[in-house]
Length: 181
Image (cartoon, rainbow, N blue to C red; front, side, top):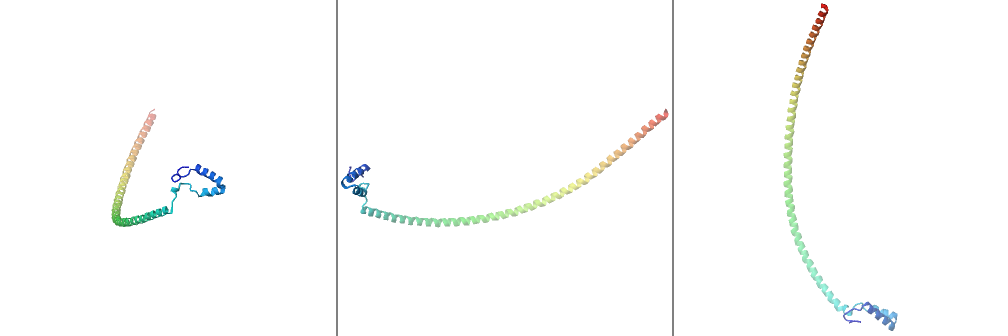
């Protein structure tokens, strides 16, 4: 076995010890004794003094932690107050900008309505002028068509008269030729 005060017993050393104790004390008593031996070296086992020292350290850390939490809470409260102030200021700015936007939109709506009304009036005027021009064009077109019909009718009548005169002349010529025979 190595230095007991500094190094824990290995598993092989524990087994060897158990074997030896079984020979001297029997298996039941050897088992009870081995269960009560720590698996680590004795210098690693905490005493009541060690536990109280750790407890004191933990209490000191707890106090420091509470102080830090208190400081952190105070800082967070200050930052929250500052943030609320900034948010209030931003809310006021936003309301002002929204009011300006509403006003601009109202002006735009009024201007758009005026432009649309002007456009509608102009369109009605243009459509009325167009109808009038189309009426004049129709009247003029009907007049020209009537003139063309008269000219065509006159030409057809003249051509028919010429054709008729030619037919009469040919028949007369044929009749005179027949009579001359």
